[in-house]
Length: 321
Image (cartoon, rainbow, N blue to C red):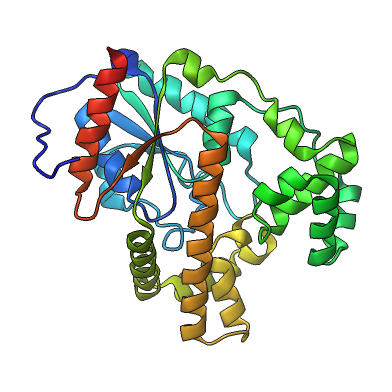
């Protein structure tokens, strides 16, 4: 991509096909999605498992009120902290949003780093069994290292790919294994045919040089704390954050909760959030590269969001013939 690229030539997304935009946290997806939506008369569908919760604003880098005025956003603030949310609900709501957006003659643009949600849209959901309260309670009572040992023994593929710091996902994988007596990884790999490829959807992933991404993560975390992440977390705790197992997995909030409970001082907490976010970004990249046929767009140092949008439009035009 060249900074001299010009976005002056209009481009119409063929047949209002959905566009998927993924990649690691802090890579710049939101800014690109906003400009892309403006260029293509699109609307944005959030594919972020934490932005669905009302009140989780600063720590999830949720689009601002001004950004939402610029472009309509969907699947933000759709549930409260007392409610559960999963990929199945995302899929139902996303389908409705896509139909409504296309009905208005506009382009649906998925934007987010929750790879499972984007894969659910592309391939549907597998037939994994529903939660079993007894099995789940037993797994939740197990020490973390014991759960990980069981997962490694029963499904090495899932063990290697899963976020081992996320007990919710580890517990779900083991729950499915125990209920079906089959590897979790096998059940996730036989989802429905890739309907996105069949329908000609565009799936782009943004990537930056590692050192630059780490610097962007550090700046973002510092900005979140300056914006009031600690105070926001205190308010959320008063409204049930600690009781929501999914929301409590959000990086930033769970570390601030530990800080508020006296486990670490503020400086240590900020550094821990930076470390956890870098680790998360690495896992996101690994997941996308293993699970999805993504068309990667390298964002070079100094490239603006506009330059990236120009490159995406160029590739879309080439693919559309």
